[in-house]
Image (cartoon, rainbow, N blue to C red):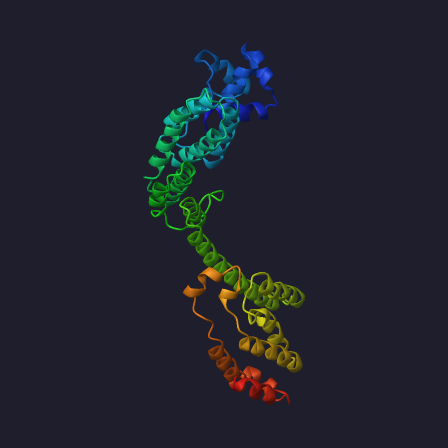
Amino acid sequence: MPMNIVIQEQRRLLGLTQEQVADYLGVSTPAVSKWEKGITSPDIGLLPPLARLLKIDLNTLFCFSEDLSAEEIGFFCNELAKQARENILSAFDVAEAKIHDYPHNEQLLLNVTIILDSLLLQTADDTLPIDSLDTKISGWYLQLAESNDEQIRNSANYMRVSRYIRQGNTDAAQEVLDTIQDKTDLISALPDKLMLQVSIYLQQHKSELAALELEKALFKEITRVQMLLTKLVDAELASGNTEFAYKIAEKASAMVDVFDMWEYNRYVATYQITEQEKNADTMLHLLEQMLEALTTHWSLTDSVLYHRMAPETKTVQSRELMSVLLSGLETDPECAYLREHPKFKDLIEKYKDK
């Protein structure tokens, strides 16, 4: 644990204020505050009385670790952000000193770089050497882009792409983006690869291409959500929560209207529940709705959400699906209770040739 954290934690443990520590040592309160922030360190002559005041020995006060913990990095970065809002030049000096002390800690370097990059972007002080500071940040990102740690490397490259987009350098942005594998385990605040790609397309005035990529991603995600809701219905049924299962099925059904989905999808989750209940009248009514949906025309071209991707997408094979469904109804042992119902045969005959 670094000395600044040892001082702060031990002072708080003893219930001392920074003013009390300052009075005892004959220094100013701001000096103690800077010690605890890691901005400066106590003079060597003050270390023995400081250790006595804090009721620790010098070895504890000098406790040195080869590396920083995640908590220590978080504490330092919080203090750095506060310092940067007051004096960003001073914050850069503090950051460089810490990086010098821990030259192999890439997580520290990444967090520090992202913080200073963000705060420098917000700085409107024309007297600051913005170009020089920005070059320093670029160098740190470039260093991190060579990391052996994939998460560190990808995170740094995401930030590099964002910076290139901000600067209008779409060729460089695309070049870096193409090196990134699309992962989901990066820093949560970072945009995903698709969002960066879309930003590049928009800057290149390729709005149709940007919209197409967004349509494809939306269709994929909506389809996945529908599948998740259907499985969640199964889980609730297995847990005996039929009421919850019905409510989830209602939400799955509502997605059809909101997201211009195939009408057949409206009934899939409800089918899971009805199948378990074995109520022939209810199931036959639902099956008729599902079979009728299979006869209804549906095309992505008709949707405002997916019309660009229509030429790339295969049409739904509703006739083949209907054939499979009807065959299952006639042969599946689980459907034997339906075949005993007087309306079953009429239902099969109605849709067999459609």
